[in-house]
Length: 121
Image 1 (cartoon, rainbow, N blue to C red):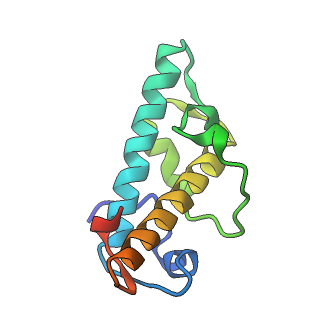
Image 2: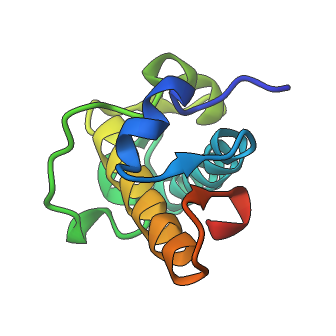
Image 3: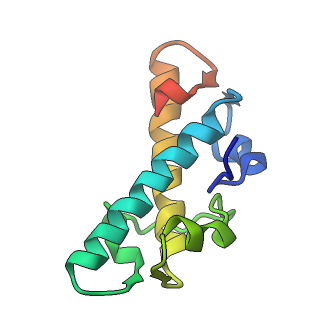
């Protein structure tokens, strides 16, 4: 198993009223990793060596502040593949992670399940 970009222990708290499947953390980490890769491409296309929160898809529409961070900040530098990492990147990715989990919970509920699985992302 590769290093996760998300804190597996906090995922249950992010999905109140639901159970979380064992493969959910890895699937969420993969989605966050893809978002980081897209953010790196966007920063590069704008001539910057620093990946910022505004480079994350949908980051500008997220205004919610979440108490617990699901993102492992120490792993972001590795995921950004040689780019500098701005301080707001983790916050934007955290917001994205919560949005993905919320959508996953809604999908599980619509399928009459109490367990959020990787396929719900």
